[in-house]
Image 1 (tube, rainbow, N blue to C red):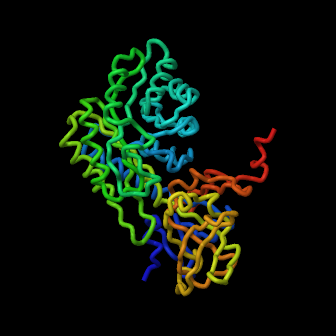
Image 2 (tube, rainbow, N blue to C red; image 1 turned 45 degrees about the horizontal axis):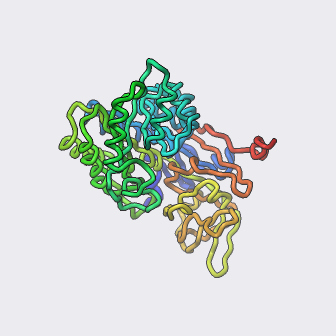
Amino acid sequence: MPHPLLELLPAGAEIDDDGTLRIGGCRVDDLAREFGTPAIIVDEESLRARAREYRTALTSRWPHARVVFASKAFPATAVQRVMVEEGIGLDVAGGGEILSALRAGVDPALLVMHGNAKTTEELRIAVDAGLGLVVVDNADDVDRLERLVPEGRRQGVLVRVIPEVESSTHPHVQTGQVGSKFGLTAAAARALITRIEASPRLEMRGVHAHVGSQVMDPAELAAAVAPLAALGTFPVYDLGGGLGARYTYDEHPASVDAYVEALLAAAREHLPADAELIIEPGRSMVNGSALTLYTVTTVKRDARTFVAVDGGMGDNLEVALFQQRYEAALATRLGEDAVEDVVVVGRHCESGDVLIDPLRLPAPRVDDLLAVAATGAYTHTMANNYNGYRRPPVVFVRDGSAKAVIRRETWDDLFDRDL
């Protein structure tokens, strides 16, 4: 039988006769020799195929619609460029994501800016660049924009609304419930909408809601549509993102088609037929297109067997933040039987630096390569320099060729900001 890890890897991943994983036509041992480890390996064709799947699923069902990628999930310029080339807009949160999106060649009119605490500098970048939509989260956003937008221009805005939907996901990634730091309750949103409609420098384009991240049931995401409709008739309704991605063998999130159909069933019931609909997939757009490749540095067999790798919470904070589960395998020994239960831990000086617990492997050895599947979302995003860790490269693979689109940090990089 094929190794179960293939279920979680990009289509086309395969195992050579000697038990070595091949992704995008490239053997992982060759990738480790060329780029070192840890490394985030992205199957470019899988990334593009997912973008096309989302775009087709939405626009074939609701012609006046667009998909914008939530850049925060993987804010690499090369990833943003892929989205632009595949006809996908970009959702940006903060000045850095705006600037990288512009470097990726996006039409600024297709950018949607988010953030609950936008600074004056960031809003100035957005206004100067001519961003299409700024999602205002509070009255302070409006105050700043009214000062920044030049006379004779109007900035399109959406108002972020709390839809009062409590999704069945981890509390750290819930965003649609009463008490969320994001958005406004219906009463506060109505008051801000009235103010914007009277503004000579802002154009009230519509409303936005987001229920949460890693939501498996699309009905929970569709539940935000009716609260948006209750606020009035607008040209644009941004339904957010949040569809869950598959990380483990036991998880089975809804398909893109099922997710889109759930949203559009609610839209057909509650929204004007000529309104523009926007969706903002992030995690589910990119997660399955990548894996992280590590080298085993130590194997400690004591009260438990600890397999330590050369990365950890410096390149993957998801486990520490909300106990995300991952699956992994020894990437050059996939033909061997798994015989030992281990805990995969990172190199950082924190007890919480645990990547996978438990995991069953062939008896692991120092210098084995470990492939952790489904690491395309929020790994590069939240990579950090804890313990002087150098953030890993991002490597695109396709048709047997590999190229680094972000290089590994050097030791000198760690000190570039010293004065």
